[in-house]
Amino acid sequence: MKHTLLFCLLFICQSSFSQNVDGFDLDKMDNIKYIKVRLFDAGKFGKILYRASVDYGIIPEGKPTFQVKDSSGEFMLWKSDMEIVNYFASFGWKLLYEKNGTMTGIPGPVPEFVFSKN
Image 1 (cartoon, rainbow, N blue to C red):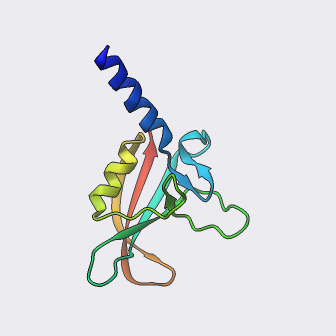
Image 2: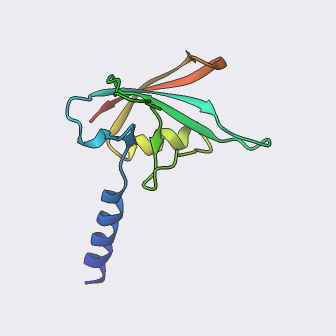
């Protein structure tokens, strides 16, 4: 009984999280098979924190941010690039490759990760 309750609780917690980018839940969009995630520094006062910009091939109306938000609508912050890779892997995305790229408004190279949906 204890294990069943624990499993249900974990399932509910996992299902309450999603990859919300510009109001789109990437998990529920069957037409998105590949994404490109670019990292940029969002740290302040010498603290290392990253934001992730997600290119999913659709340009929404309005003012898109292309950034992952948490369940409260706040932009998610990560402490390392591997934390971001593991985050996407936990939703079934497979890392295909990583390279340095560019991003408008960000000086220097930025890490880019390309994922495919399993």
